[in-house]
Amino acid sequence: MMRDLNEFVLAGINAGAYGSGQALDAAAAVPVYDIDYNPEIKTEAIQEALGYAGGNLEQSIEVYQAIKFKTLVRPAGDGNVDVPTINDVLWRLCGSAVTVTAAQDVVYSLVDENFEHGDIYYYVGEVLHKLSGVRGEFTFVHNIGALPYCEFTFYGLDEAVSEASAPAVDWSALTTPVPTTAATVSACTLLGQAVDYTTLTITPGNKFSYLHVSGNESIEFETREGMIDIKVAEPKPSVYNFWEAVKKGTEGPFAFQRGTDVDDAGKIFATDIPNVQLNGVSRSKDAGRLFLSLKAKIRPTARNNDLTWTTR
Image (tube, rainbow, N blue to C red; front, top):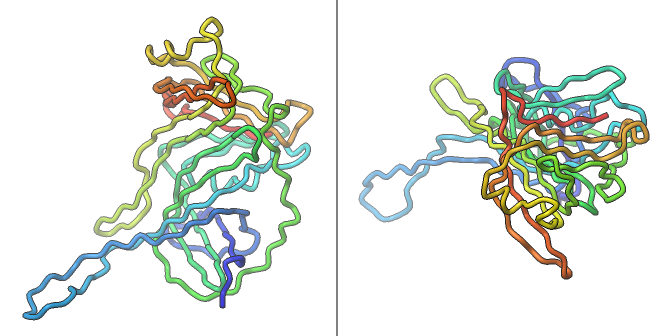
């Protein structure tokens, strides 16, 4: 019997024609977990009068694939400020462009055209699922007292399922994730106000969906709806009145950094959002302490200046 422990993913950018597919090997392996694979199959019933009772035949008319998984946000490693991390390919397949500045940093920003595409191989047991023309979407999760991770959803064109032995992958070069803690978070500001937070989710917001027209079947950009969800220790109104800020739809910047410049070179992760607008607030209580759960839309002030995330 096949076992689900024999499970992992390969992912690669395809520089060739859209949906052309490419061969991936062990060098394209990415460490993922919480995998959820589903083919999206649309059928249509053939409802003809045949003169007797019974189920109607159904014909498959559309098939594409979807796969969800999580990856830890791993650093490039000590001193590797200008080396893309192991999540580089996955971020780029979600509609982002990368800029590498030698001896300085690696910066990602969203794009709204000329999207890259790629391929994903999903091995489970001795079964291989291939997705081509892959594009997707994701969120960052930076909760205090936990390892940071990304949650991805990818869509791809249908390819035949086959039996295959998984390639041998050498994971020895994987770097150790930096936990998100009071000691490692060097900055977190919302609307210019420093906040003490417990949970943080950042959704860049690019959305893709399956397109099926005559002469074309592809995964295409649909819209962008970026947002952040953050739970903070409620400050006194004299420090910052988030209740009134939400009522007014206050706008301003958001910034987050894990790691300290110079001391943690090669292990720093930062996000900068020039403009967000608060649009939700609720209070909760935990061990006698007051917390606010805040929602904010990412509202760009220029084309594709929604946010950047940086490793250095």
